[in-house]
Length: 578
Figure 1: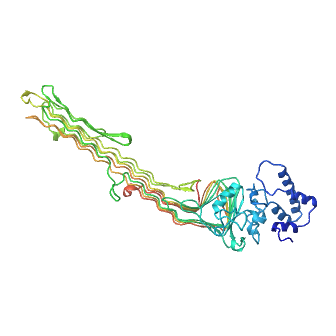
Figure 2: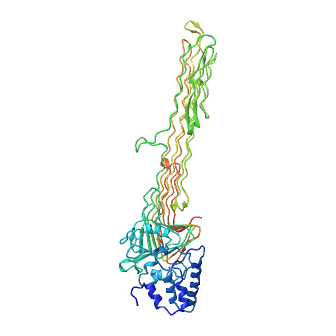
Figure 3: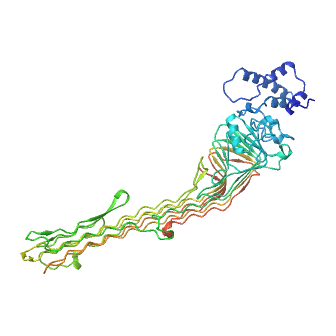
């Protein structure tokens, strides 16, 4: 036998005799199994040749399978991702059609398969400047090789049983044969696995969407503990794809704790209390008697003051104007805005008993209504095609309402003489102070990251002889503390009487702004061996599934006064996200 022949060529030379016409037909077969599409003369010849092979198979000539396998192998540039119409099972005897010739399946061959079967990858021996077309010149990076293979339409990767520290994305229709013993000629021994160690915070392996079947054999996939607040540890994320995983182990770390919710206002220094909201403005003072002379003279009361609270000033607080002082009577002040209190003081009547302490002083404004607390994060969270999983965060509280402005103080009547001139204006009342602004709310705590070995989103997956091991869920983040409402502004000082005339009255103090609502705590992270949305994952009976401990929900802000903590995470071997 010619030692320069490939193993496939040797098989062809030693197979049972064939008719000359059949030999000519097989020699006309194309070396590439093309994708579905337009059919030219070459494809028609291929179809005729395949009919010949089928006749030999029906007659019991098993060696014709080797002829068919060898005739479909050629140089690396000629491979294309098949449409699934070739024989051979990548599972080594399941009988399913996966597009891989039997001669190219490592498990079914005692020695290494031919170089022409696909691309070769080794983290210890490879170099990404190689084209990977042979065992002697493998590529190094599994992810780089997968990208190049997808662009060139190459269907199969053959990978040493070594560690690859990278995330990989596998195109639809690609098959990865892992666990090859590269110290023994790249043969399959069944004792090793290709170990993919992904980076933190992202799925270690992503199976990309498409209408062709993806297959992974003899892979160990590891995702480390998540590092970014609220990030999850996920081994495999499959979205919109049909995929088969054979002899796999998926082991993931712990989800990260959720981030604390931001406070309503940042303290000046770490550890300091949250500063209060804007205080109300002080009322304007009244004016003294005799600023004007004559029977119709009037001294204007202190002008109203306003605090423009809330976003874009939508929640103003106004202190009421002070009462005017006239020659013959004092006028009432005006009420503060807005609320149920903040009554104005009464002015001094022309006759009768009157005092500031009795009814003349402006009244204190009503305090603002506190904001509502945010709700704690609850529920399973959401499976996504981007990151795999997003947890339930706590919601922010609402802003407190501004305090009501104080009422304006009452004015006094004027004296009989002002500097020798008969009659004059009386002293006027001070205006009420405006209310303090409402406090800003605390933000919701972040969800704890989950630990999920396998995530399937609208995919069709089957696993045989695999193990799925999840770690612990992260703790939910605490809700943010809210801001206390601002203090009300003091009332304006009253004007002073002259001679026998009385002093006017002080304006009322503005109400205190309502405290903002505290943020809700984030939900605790889950721990699932597998989670899916859509078609359930098909598992062989020997599938081993392990879960860790779910994370606890984060407490609500303001020392959990409102009882708005997030819910604890869930532990399950299998979780359906409907």
